[in-house]
Image (cartoon, rainbow, N blue to C red; front, side, top):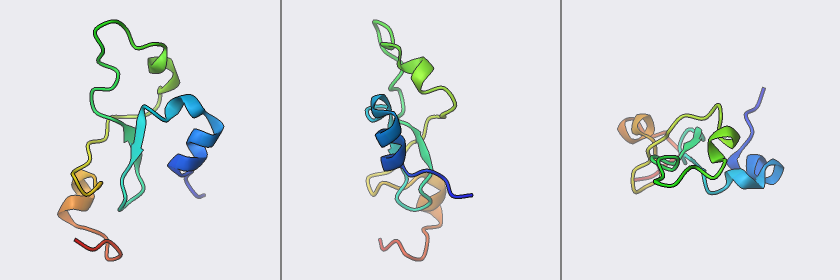
Length: 76
């Protein structure tokens, strides 16, 4: 079974766009770090983003796993 891409998720739920990003290597999708840690509330995003974990990306757009062992089709 193929996982949905970020574009497909955003197409189906446009409210997720400001919350999520995707690793360029493995295509893992996760929450932008700290996006739900707001001073005045999460604007209902916490319920919308249920089921996603935080995913940190480096400057190249790679998660920690792909940064250590980049896929063959990703050039540095």
